Each structure stands twice: as C-alpha cells, then as structure tokens.
Image 1 (spheres, rainbow, N blue to C red):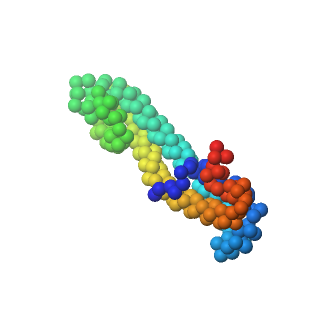
Image 2: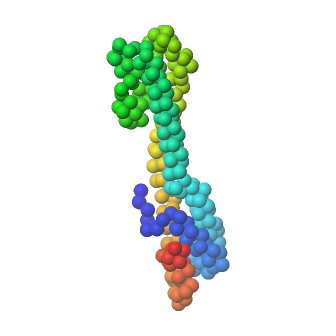
Image 3: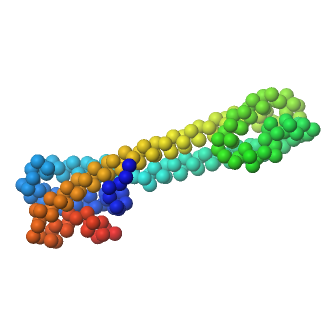
Length: 221
C-alpha cells in the first residue's frame, strides 16, 4: 500500500487540523457551491478521520511497542545466558570425563546456541529434558535443585516473549497498511477541499492558498 501524499503522516494530520480551522468559518460557502459534496456535516467527517488517525498512534507508536518487546526478548536471552553460565560449572564438575554429555548441556557451544533466537529457544526447550535425564548425577555432585528447576520457566518466558515480538511484527504490517488506507482517504478529502476552494476563491489568491495542502505543509515546517 503506497501513500498518496509526499509528506509525513504527522504533517498531513497537522495540515488537516489547520484546514479544518479555516473550513469551520467557510463551510457555508462550500455547501452553497456543492451541497452534495459539502453538506454542513462534512466538516465533522474530516474531523473524525483526523481524530481516528491520532488515536491509532502512527508508525512511531508501533515502532515503540516493537522496541519495548525486543528489549523484553533481549532480557530473557540474558537471563538464559546467566543461567547457562551457572549451570556450566556444575555440568563440568559432574561430567568431567564425558565431553559428549557436556555438549548436550551446551558447554563450549554458547556462540552457536546464542547465535539466533530460534536456536536458543530450541535449545532451552530441550534443556529441561537433558536435565531430567542426568538429574541424579547432577544432584549427587551438589548441584542446587533450585538451579535445575529454573530451566523450564526460563524456556517458557523466552518463548512467550519471542512469540509476542513476532506477533507485533506481523500486526505492525497489517496496522501500517490499515493506517495508510485511512490517511489516504483523509488526503483525498483534503484534495477535494483544495479543488473546490480553487473555484470558490478563484479571485482571492490569499484565501485560496489557505486550503492548499502544499502551502499549509510548508508553513507548518
């Protein structure tokens, strides 16, 4: 979905607010010119479109939401890393002569495991099973039971944070498209006002300029 306007969303909304201010004083002249296109309720239609667009929050709001959630994912990844570093000590102690088992627990594989979110999620999902398989040996060497029990909740927290992040990414695409459609329709209304003003105020250049989108944009900047 492409924007019909060559200005930012924020400037378009500010321009619409400015034009609405002029239109409130002149709506009767527009209604007289073309009552079908500009009934007295027309101004309320434009106002509502602007209000709805502000409520949507704009792309900056979506980016902020995604940034916050990305921070949550990073936090959960850091929690997993700290946990793995603690667990590593006990795994090496419990299986000092069993490098294959150490590999199962991610020892000497941190770079690979933490190379991507999906890979870390997959590893954390399997870690609880690995701990269950070797739990007796770990407990026998003094590994804190509370440490062994942390793997599953950490895995769940990471997976949930990642799912929320991915959902936000997908929803942002849908929301952005919907917002562009909405703002394009607002732009169409502003163009209709501008075109009508060009005829209504044919001999009043200053007045006509009040309704020009490009002029309002420049003065706003």
